Length: 394
Image (cartoon, rainbow, N blue to C red; front, side):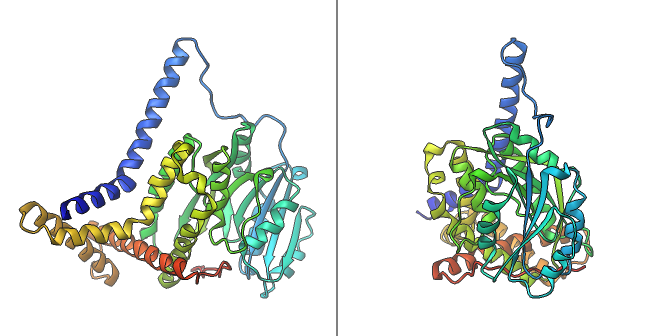
């Protein structure tokens, strides 16, 4: 029985982190070959991405802000400099009870495209429930106050909506750290972005980057006020309705990471609590009848959330199998991994490849520990929906 538990845990972990991405690569390659064969035989022509030459749809950029006086002016300047027809574009700043002068800074902007929507503090979800239905644009682009968008990003996102089957498009978020060129999240974020890109080619990106994504306004449905991870639930609901959720790697935004590891851990725990909460909001994606989106949801998300339990189960089961030389080596491997994570935490390694591996091991371990904390908060219903802004180095 211990052997069964060990291998089930190991295989499920291998699937969510390695085999699922590999399956995406294989499926994409097979689809490309099939398109090429049909084109060669004179069947349906090869379909490329929409050109964006049709009439430009109206766009509303909605930004939820809470005490963002340090960056709101830069955000407004960045938003108004985006390369999109001015008469088809507006910026809506939804202030969630800001008390630091954010509202006053927004009101100082005289550009008619900017609109402030203030209300008492109630959480980001309430801001979105208020601002998205009243937005003038057919397409709503959602972004964060500390996220800076590249000039052509809106055009790159919007061109996907020429396809009526597309309900949402996720942009590419590039994280940067002003003090550390090599930081733990960069490798993992690149890995996640690659998965999103291949999911997007199948129209099934499981969750968006909150810093930059776009939706059809008519597909938005009001979220429960207690929703914690709106940027996860909104695209999933659109996916559940049968629409595609695409990924546009040329629509790029930049966001600074934090140096405060305590707050970063808290942010990840908050996201984890929201992820477990989201299960009751998208029940259709749990069923095999949803097809590939269900496969992606289970493989990319649900198994990831179970990873701490699977890691613990694999370790405990391994302890009952030490009469075999093979399982002694597997236990040694697990022990070495956690030892590397500890070295990554205390910083005993100063440079080199081993330091980078230890840093990634530490990041991976703390990420899964945050899932445990988030699950506990979910069970106790103790995670607030309202968010606190994360302090940045600059």
